[in-house]
Structure formats: structure tokens, C-alpha cells
Length: 319
Ligand code: GRF
View 1 (cartoon, rainbow, N blue to C red):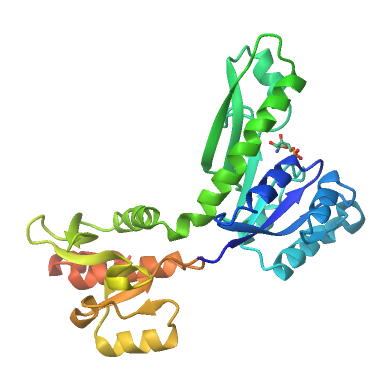
View 2: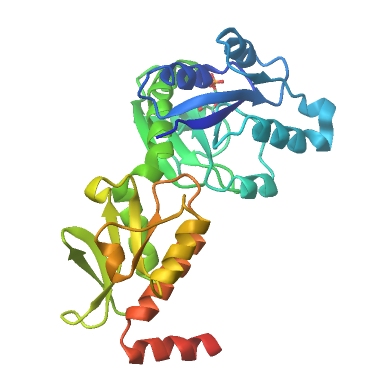
């Protein structure tokens, strides 16, 4: 698997950036730091990244004004990054920027979200008499500190703690959490169990779907429990193949051959299954088009569904 290329955005001292950077030095780390940038050209974190010979882009959001987000976008594209990790980045991302990088931006926040979004989290936790606080790594969505929670770590609040002493301890916990969760997140597309859960949620949207196995592989069937027909199967690196593939029913060998020739990175002829009309869609890639996968699932579902169900879908489509 290629290492994911990550850009880290900082506004200040960059201790989380350093934690991510040093974790990336382990040979088995699934990400590499392709760029460190931010909004303040004199942020202390940028100097650390430079000393560590990581590509740094000094951007000044004050000087750039409205052009800042375009300049940032260009820097990210030039560095060909797959993910963005916010690490003490103090600017709120505009909705169109978040949309461009949907699902590819993560952040670390110093509280146990959904508790205490925004600033002054440590003082608030102390003032509320909480016994514990912590840190959260989450996916960034347009609403601040609200995206899917990817991981959390708890930190006890000790008698006599003030915001400063608590922050210092939470920061140690942050440095353990962030690299681990980022590594897991960038590896998700290659994890057969994550892929299976994703297909399961898409397949669950059609009528009369059940789970079945095909020679031990997870599959989805349509129709009554006993007579249900398989319309999708996950083949996890079958018979030496390198694909974690979704097998769906194509119209026949001609269509399959055409697709495989046109997009060999996406489609393949699965061993044994290919002969009975199953087309392989390679899913252990970073650039899976999930809308396209959903379309294939629907097509395959229709091809395998009993006539009465397919008719129902046709009628529904007319509305
Ligand atoms: C951390 O507490 C982080 O949780 C929050 O901002 C702070 C950044 O600190 N988002 P550093 O710049 O990583 O040292």
C-alpha cells in the first residue's frame, strides 16, 4: 500500500504536528507528511517542520485576505496530498473548502466531544467539576467540532488542577492519540471489514436484502430467505488476487471485457467467478467512487431480484 500523503495545518507551536511527524518516521506508518503549512508565516511549528526537512509553505492569511483559501488549495494540490490534519489550526474552514476535501480532513480537539466544543475547554471542564476530560480526533465537517468521532482518550482531572496543568497533561495524551487515529483513518480504504460495513450500509437500502456467504465470502442476497439470489459478494484477495473486490452481476462477458480494458485500475475479471458473469470492482483504493459502487449494487440487485420486486422499483422510478 502506498503511504497516504498528509498535509498538516498549524497556527502555533505545533506540538501535535511534531507528534504526527515523528510517528511517520516509523517504517510501518501508513502516512507520510507531504506538507506543513498554516495561516501564520511565523508560527513556531513551521520552523520545527523545516528543521526536520519536511516541505513547508509559509502562507500569510492576513496579507492574502480572501485569496488565502485559494493559495492554500494550490499548495495542497501541488503537494498532491490525500488528507489534511488540522493541528492547532485556528481558522474556521469555509464550507466550500470542507466540501472539496470532504471526508479527508481530520482535527484534534482538547475535550471529550460532544462536550465542550470551541475554546477554553480545560477551564470549562474544571468549572463544571468534571472528574475527567480528554481529547478527540474527528472528521471535519462545516459545523465546527462536530464531525464523526474517530477516537478519544480520557484524562483524569486531579485535585488542584488549573487550566494550564490540565492542558499540559491532555497534550501528552493528544500526542499519543493523534498519530494512532490518523494511521487508522488513512488505512480504512484497505481494511476488508470496513469495506464490508460500507457495502452493508449501501445494500441495506434495497428491498428484501439478506446476508449470505459464497464459499465463505460475505455476500448479499435479494428475495425470500431460502430462495434469495446473491447479487453482491466481497472477494478479499481471493486466490492470490491483490484486490479486495466487490463482485456484481454485469450483463455478460462483452461488457466486462470492455470495462476492464477501459479502466483496469477499477475493474477486473475475478478468478472462477468471472466465468459466471461476476464483474470485480476493486475497492482497496483511495479513489473509490462510492456513487458508482452504489449504482452497480442497484443494477446487480435489479438483475437478481424476483420480477415482482424489479417491477416495484420501475414503478417507484416513474415518480
Ligand atoms: C491542542 O490542544 C489541540 O487539541 C488544539 O490546539 C492545540 C494545539 O497545540 N486543537 P499544538 O500547536 O499542537 O501544540
